[in-house]
Picture (cartoon, one colour):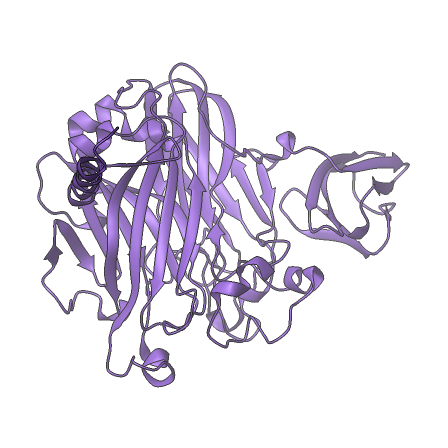
Length: 469
């Protein structure tokens, strides 16, 4: 018979060691590394006027909205394949939808601090907080990411020889409305509690690699600096009046398999603002005429996140909205992640390359709004990246067929068709139809066009077609 008293004491000791070291806990066969544990964020507009000491338990507070911590060698040794990232945000005194994100900063070895604008950084996950009342349950919202490709970065021997790897958690919040509207929030400046963990399987845990090639390209500016991507600020566009921006980057080595990781979200809550208008986004690589990715942000429905929106707001009313209603205005859902979009490039030669993002229909009414953009390049000199959900046009599984009779295009699908749009390769709208299956292109110039078909299930599928004489 086992000594249950000893077993219980031993279990408590193991639990306490796990909690105190912050290294790992095993859950469902996965090892978990805790990076931030319920750290408190404050009014984002205070910027550097921190209400407490700028360091806390090894955490570096750059701003009231941006915290960083250096990963130890022991923590890095816990990371293997099949990497997942888990973010938890708990309500304090901000009852609005805000933007948050997780970054990696590469800091010269041995530095005890750094300035974010002076080191290379990449964004690895973005999310939107729900409208939360801290006095109601649930008061915490989870965000989950599958990011196996990041394992190569954490295990990159060359990077780790040159840099310390710091992880940043950024949550921009404002308490002013909650100070008046939420019980217990008067005169408080704390907005959210943030927790960040990585989980991984044992395979290749702690095994470094010299095959990874990483190139940071651009990382979004903070919430209060609105010159990411728009059409009215010369720092945010290639040409005033157009929402288009080109980024140049240099790949130092030939890679056998490369990818671009892209994160964008449309913001601008003014009347007619970009938050409420779904726009087509086009991404071009190395000056190509044809986009390597075409997408329109937004979920089929935001109803799954209603339970986290415990404070009355203008997005979630008293009654459920239909899928069609959500798809008519929501670029993202309060309480949801923003997608990491992966563009598979295959072999990439060393040298200078470009990536361009264009949102031709964006209006930015009143010179307001912004599209924060983050992009990084990653490749392997040997082998294939262990990515997920590559969503380039060529890889999507077609639900739609496009047939051509002369210059009439006919869309076919087992799903109901909501609309069809015909655009040129620069994204300019040429033709559109609602609830029909055909588009007459008799007076369209010859050339390659993009046909986007929206289905009743919310899926939007894009095809390239050639119109000839």
